[in-house]
Amino acid sequence: MRCVIYTRVSTDKEEQKASLKYQKELFYRYVQEQGWDIYDFYVDVQTGTTAKMEHL
Image 1 (tube, one colour):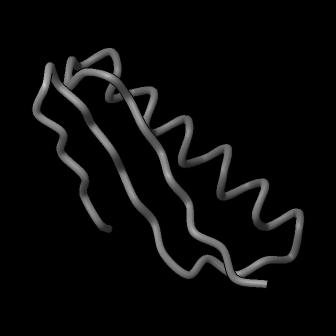
Image 2 (cartoon, rainbow, N blue to C red):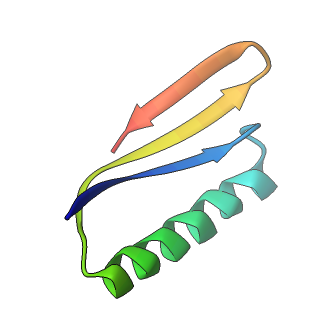
């Protein structure tokens, strides 16, 4: 099975950026345990009313 990983934080503050790292590690580990393949990876950082979505 192929899947997409989506991680998100609500601000671009430094302490929240660490959260992205931990989310990524958690999801990678989970996907490996399930035996799935990662099709794509998205990071969403929303600051105020301006949304930024980064495709990795």
